[in-house]
Amino acid sequence: MTSSGGAGVSLNDPYRNHELFRFVGSMEGVPEWVDPAETSEQIGWRVRGHSLLDAAARLAPGLLLALGIAALANSAAPWLSARAIGLEAAPISPILLAILAGLLVRNTVGLPLAYDQGIQLTVRRILRLGVALLGIRLSLGAAIGVGVIALPIVALSVAAALLLAAWMTRAFGVPRRLAILVAVGTAICGNSAIAATAPVIGADEDETSYAVGTITLFGLLALFFYPFAASLLFDGDARLAGLFLGTAIHDTAQVAGAALLYAQQYTAPTALDTATVTKLVRNLFMLVVIPLIALQQRRRAPRQVSARRLPLRQAIPFFVVGFAAMALVRTLGDLGAKPVGGLLDATAWSAAIGFVSASSTWCLVVAMAGIGLSTRLRRLRSLGLQPLAAGLATALTVGIVSAALVLGLA
Image 1 (cartoon, one colour):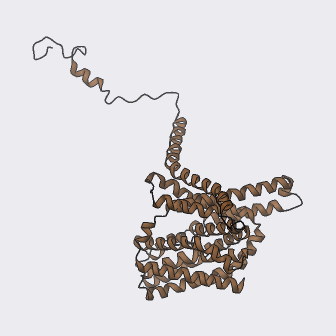
Image 2 (cartoon, rainbow, N blue to C red):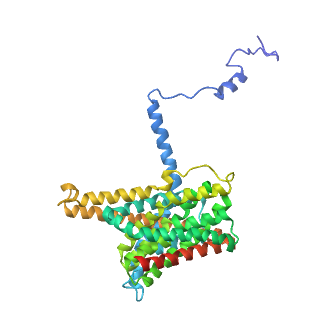
């Protein structure tokens, strides 16, 4: 067979038909060769390794920035304290420096989106790990003893904040659901309580965002000012200061930061232990308060409320269980004549406790740097005046009630 051009070229001859070569040269439709030696298990490991490297690349920028700020704060605090006039007895806290440095970076030069995931890791995971590790500082008996003292103060503070919600609705014209979110966020555990309550009362995204912004703003202010106010109110009594910080400040992160600031500023580690236990007792009130709020709201507007129940893991966060587990480890380790049943000598056991305690403090400093890096002051300014007024009224009321109860009962 010849070509239509009469040149005598055979269309079936691949060496002479350029159209066939054009198709074959593209390798279109030809499957890739797989190395016969590579099994499906090896392919799975390769995929998992690739996923881990991808996650590390996404987390590294924000995490390394927070770690750098925390290291700088830990190094700069002693240097600044040594040169500060009249502060020899009250060193400058690394917590304060870490938060301020984070706020400065976020709200001046700003941060690319690539930093967000790593920063959120510090605020969520590393913070909770730090709180859980704090349990090594207390035995179960000591933790329960603090919890028993804190329980009536916490209960009355929570009740005061929730009762204020009804007053806010009328006085400030705040929608009822928004008032409830601000109340539970202030009374129990900040943003965690808001996130848990929003779906069970049918709150929309705007109401949730307003409540979170309000709690963040006033909780951040409390973190800075309440440790110094506690020193004045309770005349340097670290236990009373811890009770106050644990009941008056909103979010777990803010309580941990304020209590560590007090402990570092006034060399009073008891305040950190007391505030942590007190705050964990407050967190457990989600088990009771949020179902009751959902039931009341469902009676008022049954079609607008989700039937979703509060998961137990959300009502009892990981760090609460972790704190209790570490306290149990401390209790078992201290039993008997020799630590850990004779597996360690007293020096090694004390060194282990010191290492875990120092690790928890380091985690909290990194988390506070992350809080500063994640706080956009412009976004907080966008809140309306009504939610801000309601949040301020609730925050001040809870702080005043907490101080009065600590002075009167503890």
